[in-house]
Length: 552
Image (tube, rainbow, N blue to C red; front, top):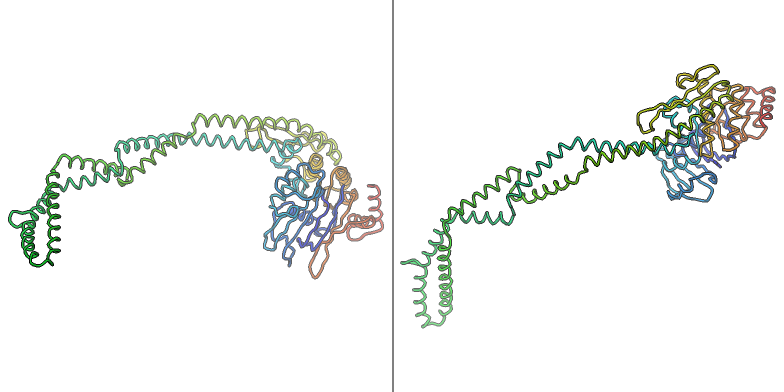
């Protein structure tokens, strides 16, 4: 139940503190005074979209706070705990702040929250019926939603929609696999051929670098032999080899070293050099003997080079990239081998369809059970709303499988006795539609889980004796729920247990709205204004007092 509403700098409201009571309460006032503004503030704190335009002109921000008693609100405590937003037991505090730039902040029990969380909390607390709610009755989706709510199938409808999405997704996966089956098969075939070609090369980087070195050596064998022989002849030629000349030089220097010992060190170096040159000459001779001109080996090396280079060009690779490409090919082949089997996808689709149909059929049964009960309840309410002999029916038509189930829901009505039942959209006049809408809302409010019901001028287009009946309907609802109603009808206002008057005045050159609870005398004056307009006479005041007395 709504305990209090605090509003600051919201549209025309400068500052307002309102306390509410159980039962049926009305808000009345002149057109444009700001009655619906109060409900707009309530909607804002319950998570509706925030806009910069709600901030009162000249103010930095608008702020709305609502306090609720929650003892009779099943499920709310669990939701608060799940979202880490629990507060004092039995009380819930919602707060919304909107800055002049349009940015907004939300709080639940003093803790930062999202607008969506405000909305989810509000769904436990308040059910708001707007003044044009009856026009939505012409839409098939709204008719279906109302039947599901009345039949207790709202959760099942959500589950059915979820199962339908699962079925559609499973079907999409199967269809995609079928479309891609040929493409995947072609890719697998190409990858298998690539893997076979590259594996047949028996290629390795170490072997490749060794082959390059061997080819370089074989292709230059003649030059290597000739060069090594020439170097050997320079060292040990028959006539003027370096070693012969070095031997002569050593002999001459040895004689001189016998005369002067200072030449012993250079002589030793010459002897060491002579040994090194002898060793180099022997290595060159061995190299010439070892290196052969082998045209066959050279031909084989060249053929291997051509084979590898051709394979690399075929796959647009450098030879050094072949091992990595082969590894990638094998990995992709393994990945394709793990793709879901088309048969398994088809079975998953069939299972998803069966799960959807199970839920949809359960929902259809609930709807079927609810049609007669809802038709009977609304028909009874229509009799009280000056539609004697009128009849309301809910018809289910078989439909194609859809997110909302296996049937279409259609509201039918016979506004007067003797008329056949026809679809609501083609039968009811504006006034009749308004009354049928109110009948539906009062019937559905009886099964709503919200402890607070809000009606914003849902009695528009109704007057006279029907207005008095509407007041009685709302008063009856107030016996089990807290009911807040914005109304222009004195017959409705007279039935309220609590009455608030909304007025507009000018402060500092700006229009502001104010709200005040009315005592018995003030209620007489307000009802007299609603009855007689600007000029209140003794007759209208007496009439107003009589209305209040008869409603007591």
